[in-house]
Length: 586
Image (cartoon, rainbow, N blue to C red; front, side, top):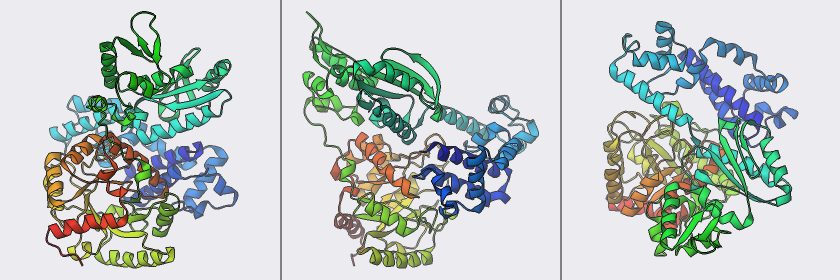
């Protein structure tokens, strides 16, 4: 992302939080600023490009007032309104607003009654009983807040995969442009596709005479907060973006494969490989695979494949390297051929301006077709119970159907499929009438309320509907913000198999739901999976690659993922469930 876009997105996000704290009467400002933050976060161009032609107000989500603030920031580096407002709320409270158990009213009460202004003071007051002594607080609510603070603290130590990829891609781009650099590769948990990332590891192969210059360039780059260590072949530093540590190593070309294998990990995978090497009188490290006796000759190391081969193994995709059976399967040449981004034919989870999306239906569809090269896109706006997301009632969906038909005709085909993300209500019923759901091409059912209870029964009930094709983001988690609600995943998987219902891998960075672990459990029992980006704007479509990564971590092959089917194959899946549950196909 362009730096100025990111800075403005953070400011508007904080303005939204400040107004949340100030009270319900500011709800429209809350929504407007958060929408502007989202737009800027995903904007594909530098925001200043829109100022030259006076086009700021033409950007969806940027009104006159916000445009003025953007101009002010570009010109002065500050927004006076923001500088004034942030003095009216303790600085720690902005981040605390999203902690489970806290919220504007709770924080206001604690602030006024106990004169608490920092996170540290809040934790102390929660632990010593002062908060529980306040009217309206109980032992359980205090415990929930402490748990929420603990979750947030753990989340702060790591960043989401999507954020790490964005940073890593930028670093790779900078390094690749330097004279003498032969190749650059991201290693570590990013390469393995973990949901959250600690440090960022980069490997560089470079001409020997240019190494010193490359090391100096990297250590002195814009955005470097602190250099921790700097040597002939390595730089460790902390960068401003997400306050992450970045380790960059320059290695010889003959060591490339060994270093990539070693620094990709996981630790458990590497330990297992060392055991195999030892059994063969070999030694493996980040420099290569060696004979452990005699002259200790290096026998492999230039490529990962060469090392695996010498150990009697086939190459193992990075996403599988968690020591969960991949080495044993590799030894028997039984590793699956994992699904790839190129296998994806269409998108199953999108939102438009009709509910809480930022783009029109046509804008979403044309991007999905022209930029993503998809064969179809399912539009799944929210149903009526999701009021905060502008959910549609039955009549509004019928009106939306008419617009979809018009756009499809305009685009020359049936690219847009009629769908919905229908709420599963607390009693397990669906938020829309069956008579409407039956007209849908695809129905995803999701839970958007009552996150503190066991929601297994709600999902099981939704699976029983002949019109529900998939369960959206089944665990309900938001990484770093909200734990998954209690859920018996084994029962859900069994019911999905019984009813012919798919489970979603929701690729939104904070969801990544279901996880790779649950995906593996599901496909082993015969459940079909569908990958959805939950796209609310054009930039969100890029998350498909991370959804595929999660599927790969779950050992998923092409045949396990509904998105790899052309639409006639999807229709067969939908029809099979309806007929199995007694609904005749029309």
